[in-house]
Image (tube, rainbow over all chains, first blue to last red; front, top):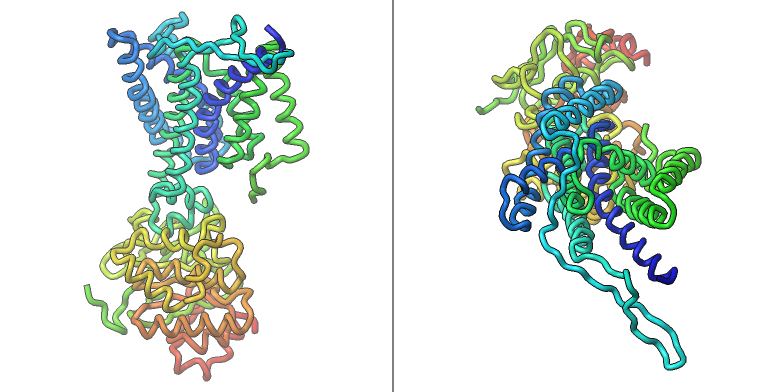
Length: 308
Length: 239
């Protein structure tokens, strides 16, 4: 295959990474932006979503699409409720203190990881994609007779991968519309700006925090359910999404949703492309270097605001 | 319950409060009657703003009582206090600066039973805000921001309005506008608890003044006693 179609294929892989990372990073960004909590356990909520998706799909049996659809609803709901419970039992009792919640979420990370290991075991678990559709991608070739349409060998993708990109775009757009247009979205934005004043105007800030923590975790779980037919579920799979989400949130600007989405596309695409042409490790090294540069030259990120 | 003018609406008794381990109030006592403008006066750091925050449940009360009508406010979570129809205009306005004027007002209207009526009332008082509905609050001028802060609190349809230095940093024309708004609210039957440093503003609008020093109530005067007790103003304000 020539370089250009190869690059196109790598870009497509990058778009899938960007799609999933945008979901997990938006969840992390909401939690940090509104609650000022650095959720170190965010990657484990992602892992839990994938493992629960496998459990639901394998328990239900039957057609792959049925199990997948059930997982798509049950896994984020379960993980969101678990996170809301963790908020009530742990974070609220720590009064959402920044330092203490970091330590608490590190503890939560290990608890979730070890419970997943003890319950589901150390093996990678596959989940079948809801539909099996292979799409050959045409390419263009210039010749003396003009532009010819060709079908290079290996230039193909699956319909499911394209569906993941579309689903992530729809979910992220829905979150933005929810924040902008709904009453609860207004409560969330007011709480993000000044939680004390939000309270003074009747907004139940602690309830908002509980919902936001649950929503953040549910978004990570949703990303995991979408990716699990491509990557498989494993109890150690939370590390990469956590690292990439932190990178994205820092580059985009802590608490800035548009910045997070833009950075997710940038980091996801570069991660996908560099992983295909070189190695996934190099992709992570470069992304981490980019974070270092952003922290030096623009500490509040691309779209973040200076906060007192 | 109908609160008659000159009947005690808010009763603050032996109030002790502070921030974490730092205690600020050491037994504050005062009351606000229905339909009156009651002013808390004192030097910076005396505990006036902390008293307002304690009433709103934003500062932890360690001992004492804050009774509004028949409800004990110290037992309520902060977000339930606006439902008692107590509004706050905080020091420095503290608008939701990235939200538009319309969204700031929507936050204020969240606990209102009659949002449409309150919206109309707010635009009657401050017609300029209606022209700025889609503008971000942080981009308004200082005077317009203060109008929005007052309007946002009025959206709660308050029976009691707490104002923390509402004329701070404003030009004289805006100070006059805010003073007029306070008088108009008083005429509408809203009780007002005002923290203010401008003695002239206080004298022009207040029915009663409570002097606060080191977190304690040290003196109290009615409007007809202001002229004969100018020395008390000097003692506790240093003017």
